[in-house]
Length: 183
Image 1 (cartoon, helix red, strand yellow):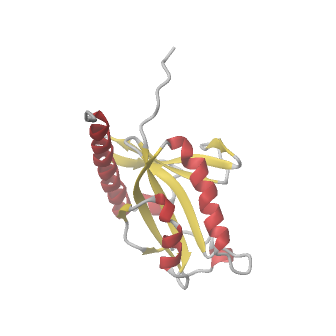
Image 2 (cartoon, rainbow, N blue to C red):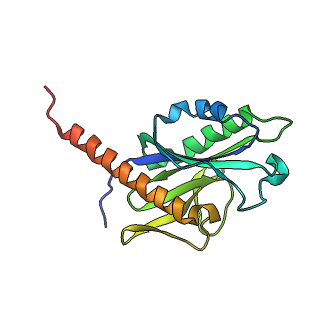
């Protein structure tokens, strides 16, 4: 039998998808609770799927943001519910103008939250599931058969590897500060 251990904190990630005509500054401001941005990908055209087109239209932009706020991985459920509140706040004619998918990056993986259940997803509670999109193996992130197409792009894999490196630096700094004697 193993001993129960508290997991290391993880870096909060948000994958933001929005209508080209919707102001990026508005949804960014709504993410203020997430902390300062540690790193962000380039904004790119979301042309990987038509899944969101009926609701959000066909001119969509996307960006990945990783925050300096380190969270307990069990908080992913909270952040998904918070993201859904923000999405609802900006709805127009009952249609989302922004889609925010929180997740996290840690040393071993990149996890997203979702409200859709599939065989590879783990239930977190309140209708939310966790989905391991990427796994870190032999110095690089590797994809799964279910990994979303935009997460598979070489430039995005490189971004997530850089985000992982910055997360680990932040984690080490946080741990060394906790180890310092307090006078």
